[in-house]
Length: 353
Image (cartoon, rainbow, N blue to C red; front, side, top):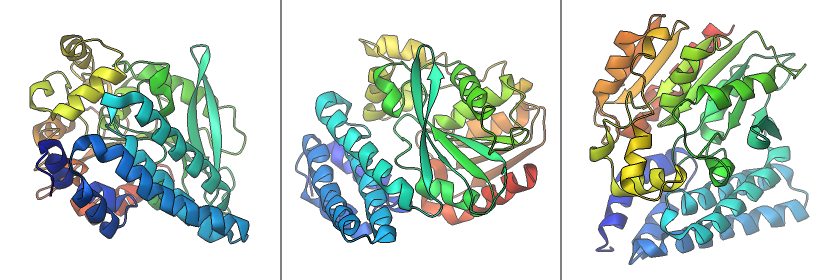
């Protein structure tokens, strides 16, 4: 086992998330045990991703479409995790990131249900997203999905599945500082701006029920989703998973890798500049404007977002609220996903029925 504290922290903190979102446990153990330094992280995970990609590409050649979709989807997740916090070497990170984008794009036609890459006009450029519609549904409701600081649309298959199974279309997108948009747009606290652009796009789709729009967010997206719901009343229901109430207040307790990723994706030169930007990610004076139903999830043992943040959000919103505190849960309670993933999808299905 590596003596690098960054590897030790990553191994202890991320195992549940990796496995819950599509990484085989044996692969997680093999790759993390092989590392001598965190500098080897992206290379090692990319090498393992390439094995799954090769299996998927071979399946495509044999026209084994389901196998191809499954394996290429998995490869996309592995490439994503190769890149997700590797911001000290952005060129290497970007190569892995774009390989992940390509793998999930190749998988989309062969998933059940299939997916469609969409582009959303935003500030003279575009935001990238993936739209999936439940099989057999005519104009289904749609749920926007906001990813976090270190998650992307390549990681969200496991999150999408419970909603698709319940007749809800999913539109996962990447806003400023996230995924493909991180290179053009810096993280911004007023996330209602990009969400407004996403809803404007949804309203152009004749195959979606634009009167039934939900919003979901994970980790930092668990701040972005309620922030958007406070400002845009086109959002009829909101799910917030492990989101901070005031990211600036949490700054000193964040892991070093998280702070550095936030700095880079904020397009800041220094940690002091990044801290100032973090302070703009706040629900102070905003939570009270949330009037739509909201479902809030947090792990009591979350070492990134204090459980008190979720409890405060639940107290301050003005609409119907359900707080699910996972007493033995870690960040996003990925170690106890069976307690909230299906249950939150049931809740959203009820709100958008």
